[in-house]
Length: 258
Picture 1 (cartoon, rainbow, N blue to C red):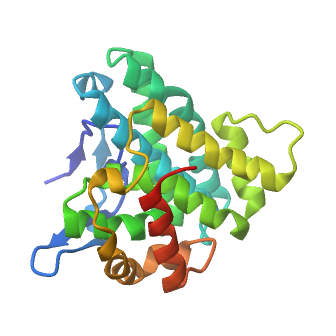
Picture 2 (cartoon, rainbow, N blue to C red):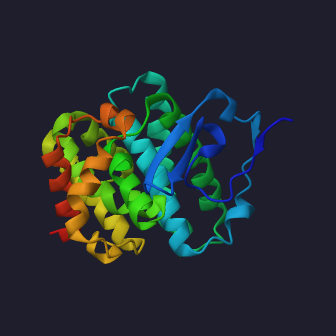
């Protein structure tokens, strides 16, 4: 029986990837399984199927797709083909997500978001994702936080941590997203991209901190240990994180931006 996948949100890109994600109910751990049999024979994108998405789901699934593209672009496994997918996805998502959020019936924005999500899925399928995903898994496994929401809250904090690992690529991301980077030195341009993502999250009504998600601070060490067991995203990350690094990023995300 052929597999035909029809996404109803512009987020995971699962219609073109070889990954399935599961939660172990006993250990409360979350992880992925990869395999070619998970690829479909065909994927059909119909923006009409996404029009009824509530704004907050539009927002979190959209930032999930953006996270896929951003992490693939700065991945240690990135290459020319994954870059092609990632950069086009970043441009499409950055310029259409707030439009789809503000007016769910905007069919052009919905179409562009579906295409951006698919391209981001192609990027992650070839270059992988990074520390955002590794750190998001414990939020889902331990506390039931939806995947897109976990990624969205963590994204600017992990970007801020990662940017010294490849400032040139982060500066490129900032420009493609639409951040004002003309005339800025590379490091400042990279930082402008982090600020752009944080401000976009604000516009989308996404919580600014883990505290807003009611995550208990005392669980941070346990979360950090689990995150580092998500080996493939950790290995793909442009900066090699220690346990202390991951704890610090969680703590920063707990406190919020500022």
